[in-house]
Length: 395
Image 1: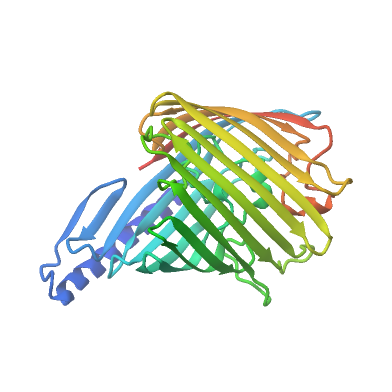
Image 2: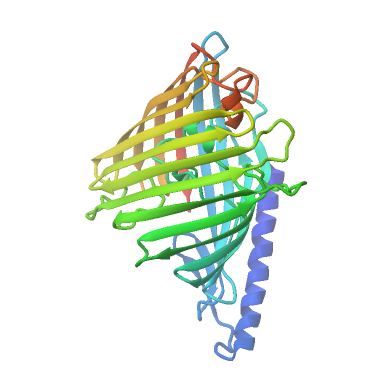
């Protein structure tokens, strides 16, 4: 662990020194800021920036220590501590306020379900992209990022009102991938749109090795307010915020044993005066196997003590239409105490997994190939119980 911390510190120092050098050089050459003056401070992260605003580096630390209990039917129970996420984020802009970047590095990462003692990720580059804004209506992004598909995956893991994302997200999400996206906001920023082309989804830090690519798009309409991607109503919003969205993608994976996939989704999100609601519906089609999966999630939250104490409920279903393939369900609740919004909070949640996919001592979970049945999918009549407690610190 000390080695990882040293690596993170080294990266931070290198990026900081590099950016400072570029900042000072830019200030000297621009003719507008000949003294190369910079400022250092804290604003939702430690930053260094030029006074003209053209160059900025902000550093954030993201920690989520967690305790988890798994009671799996007919198998050994699991009681464990883990660092669910230990990350450092670099964001800012270079040479212009319109040219922004994001680098997210993970020193250690645990799992949604700790079925295997070896299930820890380490030394992994997550986000790594640059983004140029031509105007509000048109921006372009290149690098490694989350393809614009389902709302739950696009919502940062620091801004959830459950400890972690749902089982449905394991099935339908595209994770991160390398590629290109164009996106923007039109009609007075009411309509958000995005189109993307990436390697093939869930393909972090890996290049493609054939000519097939993942392509898709997402469109969000803000009916009231500007909802964004955040669960819960931590600010006790006076205004109503309501958004609806549709998304779709077509994927031709190059890995052996993976079939061509097509997916469509719709979602709704609402928050007002401490109440929040999120709903998603999914249609996933395995084009080679002629198999279909339907999925849904409904999630509500309410602040009993405004801006401080929240109770949330969630239900999900994954329903393959093939009679031989098992359905999966998850029902649960969460208690959340917010010390400083989503940046500092303590959460505890419980879930009952019906036809659970969990198998002790294996790296397991529901994935896209459950459309065809076989190993790795949901297990008929296995009911598991999961309890988690987690602290989140993001600064």
